[in-house]
Image (cartoon, rainbow, N blue to C red; front, side):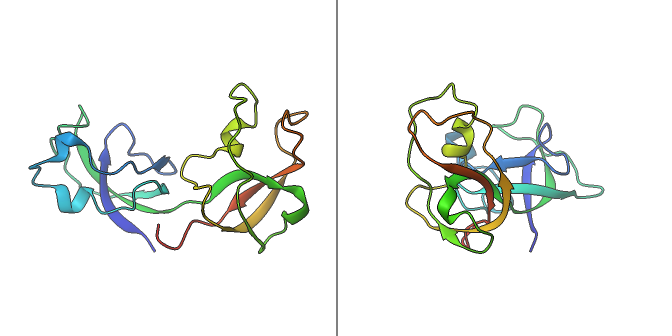
Length: 150
């Protein structure tokens, strides 16, 4: 189900994904707080529609202002243990990885995911982008369903 919110005009493109970071200090006293601060912090969202005839509103955080868009929780692409990588199964992330230069790092520590939560696998993508895991993990790249509270 789509939610209407406000995002910076530079981000307001259909298909753009972002992780909602919550309230910034500059949001204090803003008259648009209720329309803007209505998502779950730390969750990944995808813009599904730009509201027609929406006005650009001044914003202390976004230098070009904000506009109304529709968003919905987005899947999270992640590496998980290969032995449990089946569509429909529940998994947790393997844990943090210090190898930030690895081509799979963004999938081992995906933005918008929490190591403490369990996720349901939406679909299996396939082999991860790395040739070998420096932590000797056997991983598969999957899309995780968004958490229920997103």
